[in-house]
Image 1 (cartoon, one colour):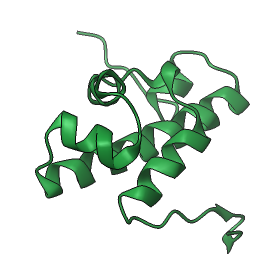
Image 2: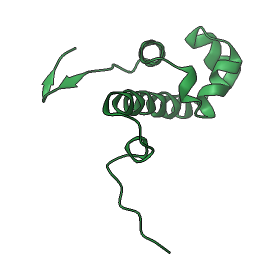
Image 3: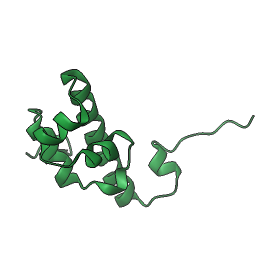
Image 4: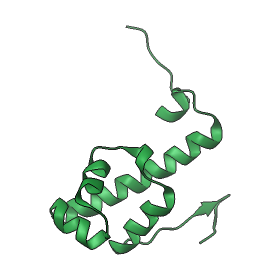
Length: 96
């Protein structure tokens, strides 16, 4: 079996340009954070949808990893509603 050397992330390896790969990495991290928080709270998808102000199918999309259906803005809002602060670090400085 041939060994694969990664370029840093699956998005880099799939050939996305740097800007798109960065966007996808951020969305993936935010989605993981939401999923982890939902698991900790033991909410059903219906309960989570009410708390987050989205439809139950949106929660299902999130759990299925449908990254293309979510913007960074929406994911930040969802995390905030779950009580998880979101910080942005640029060049080792906190920007928000």
